[in-house]
Length: 318
Image (cartoon, rainbow, N blue to C red; front, side, top):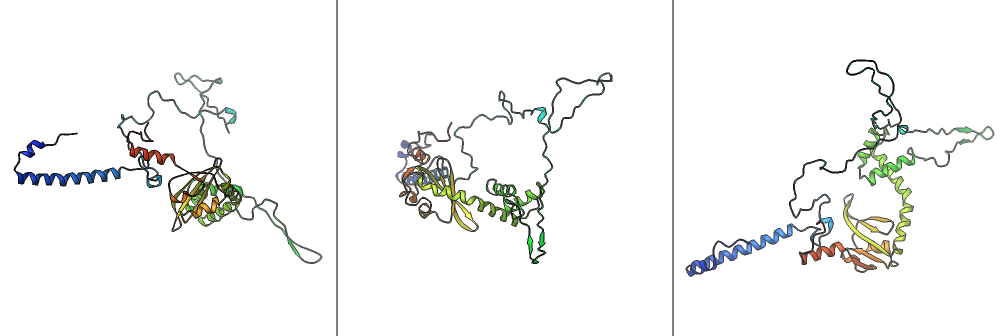
């Protein structure tokens, strides 16, 4: 800590009126500095060093390094393991094209023969994508006896819509896992896969996938009250224009997500019912206090210990 520019002895040697005025100025700025230091400390708080929930920090936020490390040049560092795409066996290639020289590059003499170990160069390319369209012609025939018309039925397993199960599954994957919008999914299907599509059709296919997956989802949701341990958390989101929360229930072998427009304990009562008596690993939100046997998250507790005891290293420290 740097020494003050004026020592207590120098202040004591000043005239009483000037000394009192100087002391008032010093106290004023000491309070101002203390308030600014507290404001800076509050701005430096993050889920890594306090009890703030992780949702208060931007998902792409980078931790502030404690120490400034040595700057490294971009790219591979000396001594690092080389990463390259290995060649596949020649018999697995779709086509093999031999490239033989016809003449010597120095004197021009005609060359012939084969190299027993040629230098192999493999080029990876995507195939031309064309949708597989199957047409089912349902013949309508008239009975020669009574005049009634009968139409042929589709074979078992044939969808009644214009999309097959693989196309429906791909749309659900792009929408759910890869977080693509309806317009982007339709653009990808049309421009890359040559599959005519509109945003409205994407919604229709997404609803078909939801209907197909709902029995499996409900089966897992009904198993939640029988679990011994569950990790539960809720993250704020939006459902159309409504403020919503994405509830996450993590069991030993599966995870159940539930989108609700409330953060109240009624969601826990709905999915866990009164039959649940297991351990709940969660933060200290009030709705968890009376559900099963709550176990506070160790990450939250560690941040609390770090605030009260700064000697405890940060969770992100190496």
